[in-house]
Length: 582
Image 1 (cartoon, rainbow, N blue to C red):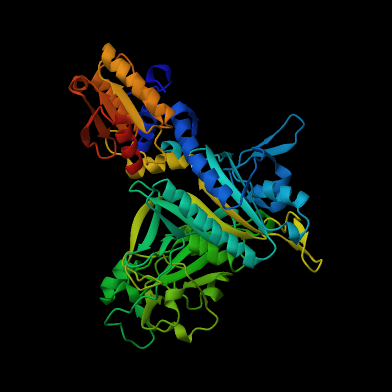
Image 2 (image 1 turned 180 degrees about the vertical axis):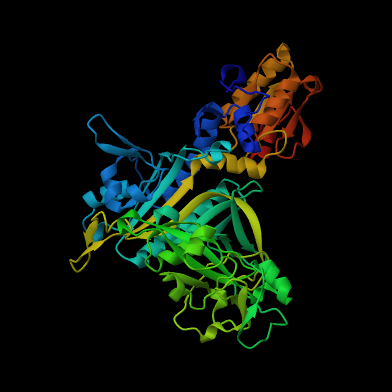
């Protein structure tokens, strides 16, 4: 490909809203063009990178036995109503009606669509298992799209869905897909982690995310310094905490604590570790409209030096059958109207005072003793609290894992890292097959819903993920598998006949050898061409300049920016060796 005949609109200026380097470089390098809020066009360079990533995904998915399909971007709303997601999904779901007032959505995900396909054609266990995948556009009406391709409204994803006769075979495929995804991201040259995660609005269980480690990542992941344990902070677990020394031994009593309405002040007042206090967190639950339940206050208790993890809390609530959609902050007025005093809330007589349906304790408080908690009376706390004496308490893992907590696998130290989610796999089980009436006949002739799995990769998001992990201050640094070109042959002086002839012949020779080569034959200053090389990020630059008269050319490694001179004899073979080795 000749630079002079290719559409690569590089620029020195970054968009004013471009905070991340990946956003800046993808725009400045002419990879993408923004056409609307959270909507980008892929220009020739961007499409080349996207195609290289896509090809790796296709090869691995096909090798794993998955069949490629393509489903409609526009989906009938009736499918989503049947699954129960039409109202539940929220404002990110773009809904519209056609000229005949038939309702549709733009697909943000395709569980309903693929289930409808399999429901139509698969009738027997003999046709199972089945794995179908697609690479397609999706649309989610993000409230605040930002960071370029990192968080958009329209994006490209690889979705795969598997169908099984039983949970054992689903687990087999889940493990198989995890191994497939590991191969994909290794081939792309990424430093990534597989982490335990929450399934979110899609539902299901056994959720795992594939996270690219990068300082700019929006996701906080918890990893162990000693073993391979890793989890999204929303799903991270820890070993039960070790009790600090000097617990506040006291007989059970009510103690006057004037104006001591925070954990910090309570610690200072009693001169104790926050571990021995109980923190009350009150939230207002908003329920699924189909339940016809009005919002109500729910109560969570955890150790005073812990923080509530909201996703864990919502999941724990729904495991009790609440069907809550979200947890909102409860106002001081709402707390007061329930008969309580903010800062002095405790578990004693709480149900009688508030008639609360949901009171949940963190698992780290299970049968804990020597505690101090609110007395549900202004300016008073209870000391000498022993939760082992309480009956019928509901416990769940609702605390956020802290740096320094112990790993649930090996007791090693847990730490935080930032990452970018690029893949997600989970078991859907019968979440969609049952409500959509997708059944098959098993070996005994019994009609059963399919067991399902779901496996996604954010294809367009991989471009910024690679750059956030690999690029430098000069521009794009791609991995070997994703770079738009293997080598950029730069003619130092475009008017020099000798340089032009030599570069053109080398270009043709490398191209015929299957090398992705760019020939920068533009009549521009050498400095401009080198700046574009560093910005765009071919793996190597080969500079054809004055040294050609001395029988050599200069090779520049884009990742390391190391330079070396190569002789003209055996030059093609030397270049091919560097491309293969590096």
